[in-house]
Image (cartoon, rainbow, N blue to C red; front, top):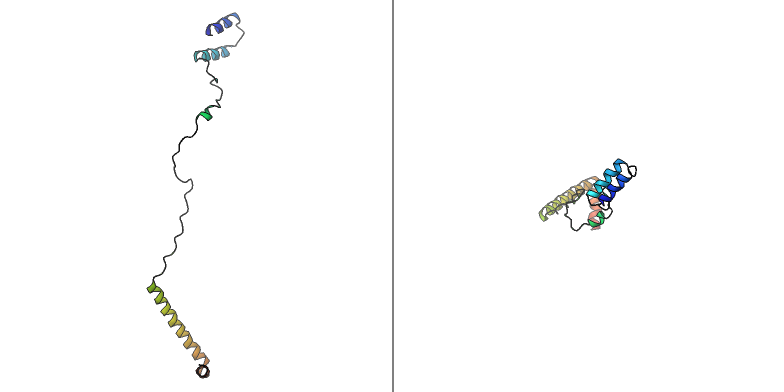
Length: 111
């Protein structure tokens, strides 16, 4: 094939310009690859399929899960209950002082 092109170029010097001749010589030296080196090969994307992957992690870090507060112990709940009862007794005493002696008489006769 190279000899045929050489004969063509000698018989018709204006058949191809010098740049095209150099390209044709290069393609002939490479065995006339298909597709040509300057063309994109659309088959290659099909030939390289993903067969495995390695997980690298999240792209965006996950938000930490909110931690629930630890439930209070029984002793602390009992202590809070005693404090609340003591406060309630104080408030009842203050109400009794505001109402005066007649409310204590009505409370005694009601019970």
